[in-house]
Image (cartoon, rainbow, N blue to C red; front, side, top):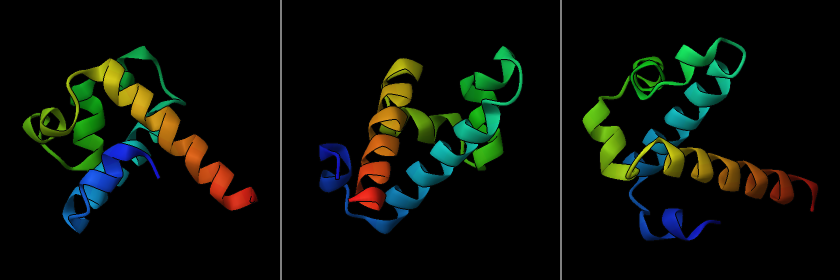
Length: 78
């Protein structure tokens, strides 16, 4: 489990981050505009302010999604 998730054990935080990750993954099949913070947060049903409470910027979010997805994959296959 990534360090970020270990610090935030509040189920609401985990749920919000999961919704943002799912929205990002759903947006990958669209065009570049769908990878905006505005589109991802809209799809996830959270505000931009909530997004920025958890991530400094879009690059940090993308990196967290990559780490979390890889961790999930490793957890599933091991």
